[in-house]
Image (tube, rainbow, N blue to C red; front, side, top):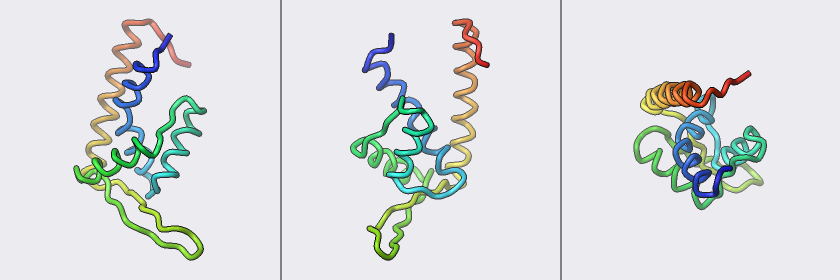
Length: 114
């Protein structure tokens, strides 16, 4: 049985990979990223604003994503994040590392995926 602290550590260890993956295809704003994570994980993963935005700011400071403010009539201003060329390289490396890790866990535990 997973404990809240082990769930938190798993989420923390995969947060960058999740966010970079979601902004790979197109620019997205923070709320959209949060909702996509929740929807695609069928509610198993949630990122609250208090943890998501500081992570987005760190990714931007590292040069992995670039943020841009967008204003639309009748809506509040939103910051859209897109993957940078450096971010694409980091994402490829993180995906490779994640595959290697998952394969090692599979070999040890005997868990097979359909």
